[in-house]
Image (tube, rainbow, N blue to C red):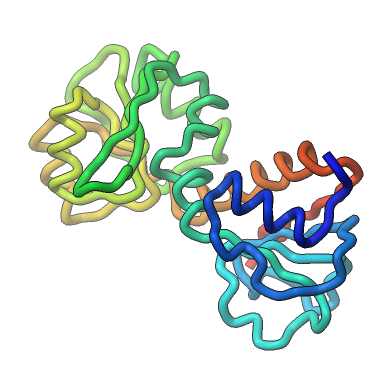
Length: 223
């Protein structure tokens, strides 16, 4: 592939993450150094880069004048955090990955992880993502079947249980769904909203480096 340009980066985000308006602010076309962050507050004012990727691109407020900005929100959330994140499923070695549809939308995937126990599954998740916010063990022992979902509510918990899921993975624990999880005997791991977003940001940086020869990236991961 050709060296990175602002238009090329926007086109890649449009094609790979289904982001229809990836170019949020025009700027110089050649991009040798790309900064990546979740939102503007994570980025210093004296940014040394040719262009900037933001997951949430509101409130730029005239910062970094003249610098091009590309962004992806919904596609980033779906494909690089919780939900139907097949990249994470592949990294973790999951098999039999199936999409979960609810109210006409794909909201996640179910899969069979290689780990044979709840403890081993949590260890693998911690090793890849850097930890968790909280968790509830499942009622049953044995090899887990997981659901990676972009939301947590009683209806989704019941759907997951009907699909044979024993461990429900999501970003944040919703108290309203805890009773349903216990009722169905489903374990829960709240991986952390920001933690999963940062995993997605670092993964995106690696994919862009692979796609555009010579591109240098820096991830700003501290608010």
